[in-house]
Length: 86
Image (cartoon, rainbow, N blue to C red; front, side, top):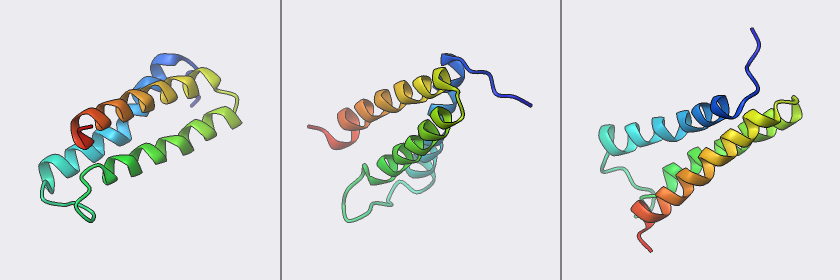
């Protein structure tokens, strides 16, 4: 089974890990915070996306990697706005 090398596949796969973190830490364990920093679990999830991006670029699926990168940046922006509250 081969993975399609397109931007939409990357966008969807890049949103999976942050979505799982959001469901777990906002609905399942809303009181969980690491040293009173509410954005840490989401930043860890986004760091995991960096490994997915690296995997995509190493295996020649650049378009998928670009989609993951785009969704990672959008998630980072949303976390900055809603969790860190600059």
